[in-house]
Length: 170
Image 1 (cartoon, rainbow, N blue to C red):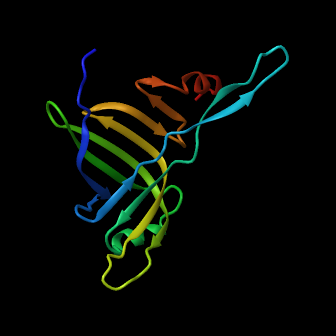
Image 2: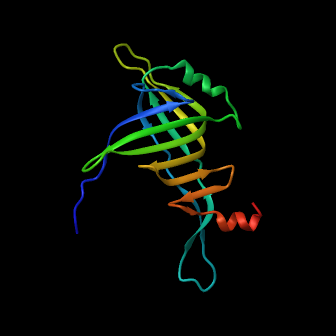
Image 3: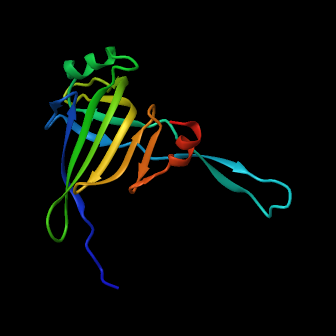
């Protein structure tokens, strides 16, 4: 079996509502992709199984900013139906050509947490984004494409809700 060097994130950029925040986002925590599973057991079964309920847990992303950016703070005023776009773009390098990792989200800024203010210390602002759509691509290949309100859940090119949406007439 051939060993390969993993592609590592060597740099990234973050964009909020169409504005580049180069040099301002000190860290970005992408959301976990956690499916809702229901434990099930019934007579005659030798144990429990999990049944996929066709849903994802609430998806949130957190971003730490190096300053109290007024443009970002003002994004708190938008409500349901007025979500804004947020994009993470990463460069992955190892052996071979550099590859891209792009995560595009529409989300609401549901909260921000100013760091403790101290002299001679960088003060940060941690943002919490509640995600309604997310698309993850690596080198142009779509890995995940989820639209929570639209009932779309495509993972690895497979429509995970096709049967459910057919049954509902959607």
